[in-house]
Image (cartoon, rainbow, N blue to C red; front, side, top):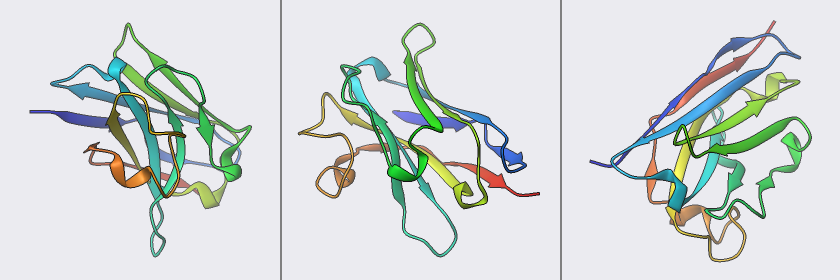
Length: 129
């Protein structure tokens, strides 16, 4: 069974950092484009960052540019989202998602977000003082 599992969420004060992990069971993440999405209460799910299967053309949503970093560790077979300078508006459930192969163009956006095939259960991130 193909599964994605996120970890690393928690409660952090504004300005703090968290590192989210996305691991797979049943398949090799190396061949997949991976994206992180988040959903805050009352809001639609939004794509936050993505890393294509060939690790170039990484993307970030404008609101996290310069604060978040997505990376892939092939030895650990995981994808990470390092989140620094966290703000209360970063609060939400964070999901990782996988798309087989390179994306058809850019790795996030209205034309590709619906193509992600595998999703994790999510990890809660709460930024609050």
